[in-house]
Every structure is written in structure tokens, then in C-alpha cells.
Image 1 (cartoon, one colour):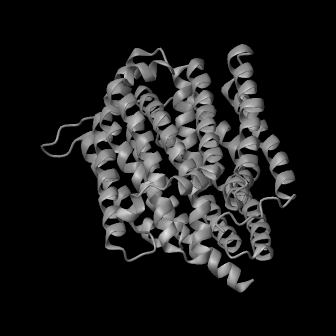
Image 2: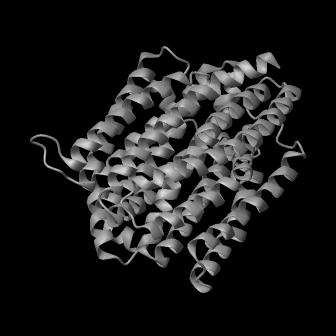
Image 3: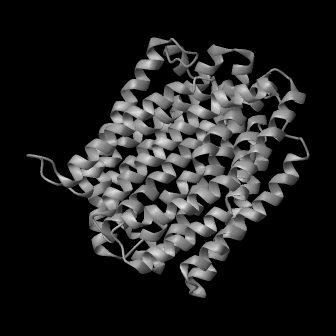
Length: 443
């Protein structure tokens, strides 16, 4: 038990600290934009919703690759870790090209999908074009950071994130509000700050992989395409990629419904999501620890230990989620007062956060169970079915009917949205208890 706790903390704490810094500084950035008014909050939130789809796709690709990286790490097979990263970067860079084209050349058309508010569309397009260039940088950095965490070098991406996010926060303030001879640029300044911070992050990660002082390396060998290897990789990665794409599309549908309910509801969702992200701070660390501590044991064919680790980490997740749910409810009472919005909108946000806080144990169990447990053993097809059936079969129909047909208040629409998580938890527990995910996929 002592070794279990020590290893879990060595992985989870750096990632949790990184997530805490990220959530904290993102909140500060969000508050800065919040000073520009409801239109600015809504426009930036909608562009970030599009970027969110790319980030989730990248997360899906990295999760699929992470199955192999974690199990190869269990065998200490560093050459195949490098080969996995090279092959998976082909996919992430291809996706980045698509989103660059959408955000740079057609931002107005993309934003018109979400809203008819011309001012929101105009402001959002201004923000989108510089952010478009960051798609390539973010996708690369995301993959390298995932690999470093999986080979138990979680402190490195933590330090890189600290540097990048600090730059983003300082430059955000200067460019949004102006400083000395620099004129205020509003949301355009915020997008330039994002691009600069992503570029710095990218340069640092490139330097790390080229210096070859960690198990995460890239050379010509990594990019030598091998069809049989790629086919085997995609056998497990494809369901994850499809899963994350359809999941991100589903979450975007939630935003679309709320956008159709009114511009103020876009702002409410953006603010509440920013506060809710504090609830994910710890669980990013726990999910990553689960991938490593379960996947590496499966790579060694140590199925008994993998099963023990999975049970302990899921129990810890639920207990911790109760505490974090209460924390974000209390934090929301303070944070919401920093936004330049009317009291009615503040009350809506506070009610939403109560709903979100109460649902934290179920939501976080689902996140760690699907991302950390089922996927680590290559049970990606079952994980995909559970998520997609819950979201598209339960969540989206409920939100669409309650929000657009029945015209329920936004708070009640959120309650309907949470039913999806309960349905997902029931399916997830049943699948996990079959133990069919206990597989070595790299032998």
C-alpha cells in the first residue's frame, strides 16, 4: 500500500499542480475578458468551443497512443514509444490543418452555426484568426506532454506549463488593457497572448525531445512510417478518436442549444465552465496516474496488480470528488463577483455551479473509469459505446427538448444534462466489473 501511494502521488501531484496553475491562470484570463462585457465573453467562449473540438480530438489521439506508451513503458521499450509518437503525430498535425483553415479563413461562417448575434460573430472572428496559428503548436505540445506524464516524468510538463501560462497571463493583461505606449487591443490582444504562450511552450518541448535525455524522444526513426505498426495502433486508437470527436461534437451541441436560448446564456455557460474546471484539477492527475499504474502493469502481464490499482484509484476518485464539489460551490460565490455582468446572470451561474458540484462524484468516476481504466487495457470500443450512447442517446435529446421545445430555464436544462452522467456511470460500472479490459496489447 505504501508503494502504491508513493507512486500514485509522484504522478498525480505534478499533474494536479499543473492543472491548478492552468485553471487558475485561465480563470484570470477569463476574468480579464469578462471586464470587456457579455459580448466579449460570449465571442471568446464560442471560438474556444471550436478549439475545444480540436483539443478533444488531440486528447483522443493521445489517449489511444497512451495505451501503447504506458504498456511499452511497463516493458521499458523506449524505441517503440518513439515509434508510437511519430505515427500519432501524423494524425494530430492533419487535424490541426483542418481547424487552422476553419478558424483563419472562415471564422464568421463557423460562428454563425452557434449564434445570429452579429456583434458576437464580428468580435469572435477577430479573436479566431491569431488563435488559428496555435492549432499546430498546441497539438504537438499536447502529445509530448502526454508521453512525458506516461513515462513518469510528470514534473517536466508541469514546469513547461507554468512558464507558458505565466507568459499568457502577463501578456494578456498588457495587450487587452494596454500598458504604457501599448494601446489596448481587447479580445484581439488576448488571442495574440495565447499564440505567443503556445509558441514558447512548443519551442521548449521541441528542445526536450531533440536533446534525448528522457524516454520521450523524436528522431528520423520515429517518422519512418510502418503500415503494420500503424494498423495495430489504429485498431485501439480509432475508437478513442471517434469517441472524443463525437463527444466534443455533443458538448458543442449543448453549447449550440444554449446559444439559441440567448447570448446571456452563452456567457453563463462560459463562466460556469471556467469555475467547473477547478473540479477537474485533481482528476487530471488521478486519470493520468491510472493510465500509468494500470497500463504499465498490464504491459508486464501483472493483471492482479493492475486490477488492484484500478479499484483503489476509482475509490479515491469518488471520495475526492465529494470534497472538490463542495470547494467549487464555495469558490463560485467569490469568483462570480469579479465578472462585469448583471445580478440575474450571476444568480443563474451560481445555481448551475451547485448542480455541477453535486454531480462531481459521478462525473469524475466516469472520467477516470473510462479514460484511465477501460482505455488502459485497450477496451476502447466498449468505452466508446458507453460514452456515445449516454451523450447522444440520453443527454443531447434531453437538453434539446428541455431547452428549445419546452423552453425550460437554463438551470433546469443543466439538471437534464446531468442525467447523462448517471446513465454513463451505470454502464461503466457494469463494464468494469466484467474485467474484460485486463489485456496486454503490445505483446
